[in-house]
Image (cartoon, rainbow, N blue to C red; front, side):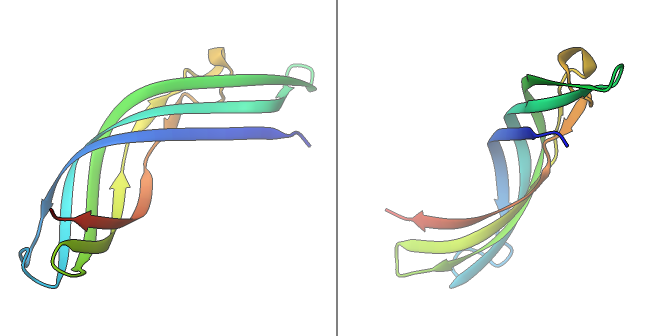
Length: 127
């Protein structure tokens, strides 16, 4: 057995356009949208690794960082709470691939998948 600590941090900056199919005046407003995201990321592997030339175990740390661009698709629902506030939820899908550099930097793979699904709780105040 070997012990490793794998970490991936993604900081998304997205620009999206939302479509409100039933308008803004309803008590509950669904929406869908899409756009583009810029994903700044940092990936690290720390711990024990196997040298397959002689099957020895060694300790090391490998880190890779980058910024990549990809599409974003979202959908959500928001409901009015009084005259100036809304609460809601959103589900979002994003897709991007980062380049780790592969074996010269110590990683087994050249690419890392930065995509996937996220959910969020939203609060909106109008003033």
